[in-house]
Structures are given as structure tokens and as C-alpha cells.
Image 1 (cartoon, helix red, strand yellow):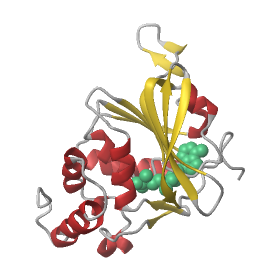
Image 2 (image 1 turned 180 degrees about the vertical axis):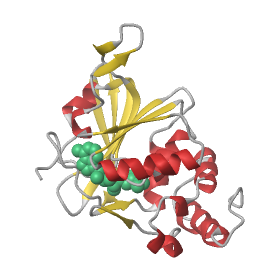
Image 3 (image 1 turned 90 degrees about the vertical axis):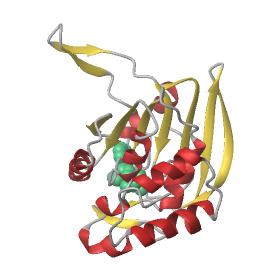
Image 4 (image 1 turned 120 degrees about the vertical axis):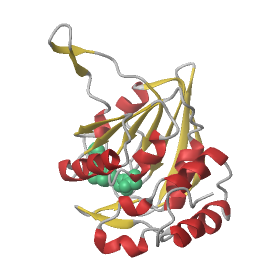
Length: 233
Ligand code: SAM
């Protein structure tokens, strides 16, 4: 399954990640496994951690932030039940690894990162991989995707109401931010680590008839989402 494009010194570790850390747990979606086999995690970790690129753990990426554990990336992706018609909003671009995985399963990914430096290196990594269905934004993702965009015809900024089929929050939130629930389409799904600093509950929430139903998936540990609807700095 792996091998595809990773016939280098990482191939064995990449294959072990797929069979032991993903399939050996509860990752069963063939499309998620295919993409986890396709996206090379070594492209997203700092050089100093390259030898640990397929470790079953998060790794530092600078600015006090981390690239998520591969299993958690796969699990959150699987829980979103994605398809090629989906527009996905990701809060917390980080290294861009999760962004790259999402981009291969959906129509378009909109991703927001608080640190310009992380967003820029994620943009460079995705550019090197030829991924062109991702829009990047630097700012406070707890407030959702910006409600103003450039109109080419009018040659000025115009108001719009962004709406997404799926939303993934990749940092811990005290509760799911209201602006994100508002930007979720009817029948849409949002996944987020919810709770305090330390351990959080990974929650999948579905919007049906403007009502939100929440489902507990498992306990997780994420860095904090800082911002207006996240934690205070
Ligand atoms: N999924 C990412 C990856 O694979 O590399 C890891 C994301 S990391 C666990 C969480 C990210 O959320 C960090 O890069 C952090 O800077 C970002 N973040 C924290 N608060 C944020 C906010 N209010 N808006 C956008 N990004 C935020």
C-alpha cells in the first residue's frame, strides 16, 4: 500500500506506520489508508526530526507547536466521512501534513493558522508536492473563515457567508467555537478536541435541522487553540 513514491530510506518506517499504527488500531477506511500511504510525513517535519518522521507520536515543528501523531491524523480524517464534493475548513494548519491528507480526499481545503511562519512553510511544502486545492489564511481560526473576499469584477472586497461541509479543529478548544458552528452546512460534520489543557475529548458533532448532536470518540492531547473563541493567551 505504501511504497507508492516512498521507495527511499523511509519506506520501511512508512509501511510500519500503516500496518502497525493505523491498520493495527481502528483505521479501516481504504481511502484514508491510501492517502496516509501516499503523503510522505518527512516532507512536513523539521530536518532535525526527519529520522523520526514515522514515529507513533507528535513531533515539534517550531513556535511551541507540533505535527500531530499519524494515527490521530488518520482517525480525525476517517471520522469526517469525506468525499470529493466536500469543502473542508481546517483550523490550525501547523506543518500542513493534515492539510495535505485532507486535500487528496476532498474538493477544496480552507486552512487557517495563527503563526505566519508555520503557514508559510506549510504553503511551501504543499507547493513542492504540487497540491493546488488549498487556500491558506493567517489569523485567528476560532472566529472562522474571513467574511470578506476580493471580487475580481467589482475590484473590491465584498461580504460573503462562507459555509463548509466539514470542519476540523486541530487544537484543543474549551468548547466548539460558535462562529465555526455557524459556518457548518446543514448535515455537516465538525471534529474537535474539546476540554481543558491536558486531556481533551475528541468530539464529532453533526448539524441536522440546525441542531447539533455530539458524539465522543476518544481521549486525546492537543496543544491549545488560542484566540477569541479559544483559550486566552
Ligand atoms: N494538524 C497539524 C499538523 O499536522 O501539523 C498540527 C496542528 S497543531 C497540533 C495546532 C495548530 O493550531 C498550531 O500550529 C497552532 O499554531 C494552531 N493554532 C492555535 N490557535 C490557533 C488559532 N486561533 N487559529 C489558527 N490556528 C491556531
